[in-house]
Image (tube, rainbow, N blue to C red; front, side):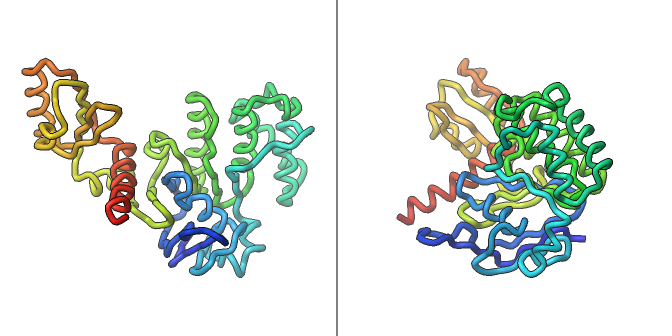
Amino acid sequence: MKALQARQLSKTYRKAKRPALDGLDLEIDSGQIFTMLGRNGAGKTTFLRIASTQLLPSSGSVTVLGLDAIRDAKQLRERIAITPQEAETIYPLTPRDHILLNLRMRGMEKKEAMERAEQALKDLELTEVADTNSDWLSGGLKQRVIVAMALRTDAELIFLDEPSIGLDPLNRRKVWDQLTRLKESGKTIVLTTHYMDEAEALSDNLVIINKGKVMAEGTPQSVKVAVTKRTTRVDVQDKFTGNELGRYGHVVEIAGRFRVLTDAEAAKSLGDEALARGASISISPVTLDDVFVDIVGEAERGEEREG
C-alpha cells in the first residue's frame, strides 16, 4: 500500500519569482523511512506542509493514507503527526507537560498518555529534565522534546522536518534509533534533513529535489550508482592538476584540492600514479554527499550557462 502519492503537485507563493514546487510526482510506500534531500528553498518544507494538511497547493493532488489531503484534511489529521522545522517549546511547560499535552490533545486517555510520555522521556534520555521549565533547557534538549512529542503518538505516518537539527552526533543517533524502532513497528516516516550521513543511514528510499523538481529518487545505493555511474572517490591533495586528473574520472575542485569520482580500476591506476609522484591521496566509496553535490551543482551550473 502507498502511504503517500503526489501527482503534479505545484505551489507558488505570492510575489515569488518561481514555484516552490513545480509539478512534483512522488510515491512513498508504507512502513518505511523516506527522506527528502535538497538545499534551503528546494521545496522540502512546502511539500511536508501540504501533505500534512497545513498548506494548500496551487495545483495537483496529494493522497495520504488513502485520504485526500485537502478534501479529507480533518480525518487525516487524526492519523498523522508532524514535527515542523520552526517548532518551539512553550514556557512554562516542562518536557513531560509537552508530551502529555500533545497526546491528550490527540484524544488519548490519560493513563495511556502518561505511560507513553514516560516511555518517550526514557527513549530520548530526557528523564533527568522531565520536570524542568523548558526555557531553562539547551537548544539540543528542546529539540529532543519536540521530536519526542511526535514519536510517542499513535500516528500511522509521521512527518519530521529536520528532526535532528542542532543535536550533537551522539543524540542524533539516539533519534535515529527511535525512528528505526518506529519503522519496525509498522509506522511510516517522512523526514527532511541536510545531513547526508543521516539520510544514508536511515533511508529505505529517498528523493533529491532542487527548485521544486525531483532530480533523483530511489534507495541510497541505487541513487549513487544511477547518478554518478561511479563507485569510488579519490581525494587528491597535491602534485596533480585538474586537467591531468580528468582522464581518471569526473573531477570536482574543493577548496583548491581535487576530488575524482571514478571506478575501482581507474582509482587503482590513479593511486599508482600518485605513489610514483609522491602525492597525498585518500580512496573511499562514493557517498551520498558526492551525489548531492554532483546533481545540485550541475543544475546550478546549467542555469548559469543558460543565463
